[in-house]
Amino acid sequence: MKPSLRKARRGLAQRLALALAGWAARGGARRVRRTGRAVGTVHWMLAWPFWGRLRRDVQRALGVDRRRASRILLGGARTNDGAIFEALTLARPGADPRSLVEAVEIRNTALLDELATRGQGAILLGMHMGNGILMAGKLAAQGRPAHVVFRDPRRMRPGYLEQCIAATGATPIPLDRDNPVRSFRHMLRVLTSGGLIYVLMDQASKQEGEIRSFLGKPQRTPTGVLKLADRTGVPLVPVDGLEREPNWVFTVRDPLPRGDDADATLDAVIAHMEGQVRERPAMWSWHQRRWKRYHFDPSAPVSKERASCR
Image (cartoon, rainbow, N blue to C red; front, side):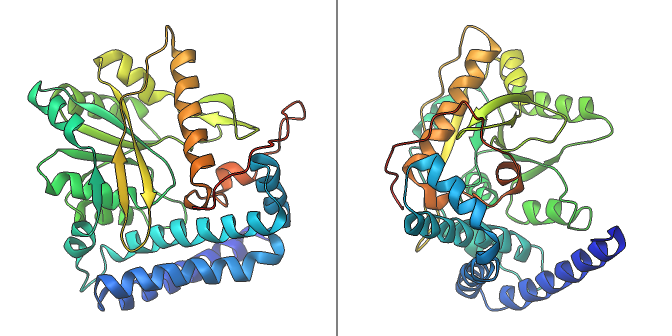
């Protein structure tokens, strides 16, 4: 497809998505949730014929049959397309971000309270397993200084995602492509002042991060936050998505063990993420391009596990 045609198609899709998000936002939280789930279902139905390779990838990664792989992909589309759609509504006229934030449940927050009493910050490790933006907003509403690290999506006008994050009450931290040191220093100030930084760990750009096997596919995993943890001594705390219906449920896990070196720590992060996907595969965004575009390592064994469809 020609670049000009691709750009025009993306522009049209963005306008339609924002128009639908505006309509849903005016109808309150229930309409937003229902519409987001429907968007994920329609995406799965329309793209189903083109997801043949992705279904086979899920079968290989999890050791499940074709039917189960399709159900997992449907769940992942409903969960994460729905989460993206919810995020789009947050900055639309007539939106009520507070009602969406209030509906989020976060379990096991005692650890964060213990850190706060010591004046210590933490790096919260997330994944594409639910609406982490709303989760961060809920932490902020509870009086916990939550900051969300993000990069402007190329398919969205610059600054819009930042507005959506700010609407929840969390503080956005944009990643500066031209001057990454500036972003690093910003996060460093947050952590040294006892703040919380939320970052998605199951993604990285083509240039940054270390190459590691994730669910059998070699891909880049971000390492900047690990350097921040080493620099500040703050713990790496996973915040995992547990449920999507009737509302988002997250839980704060115990801090990950710190290895003797950066490689060992990164391996611990990847092992935790793989465990979460295997435990709740229908919560993860299998169709994100950062996983689906990669190929399996020929030497990687085929999984014999039977994954849950939760």
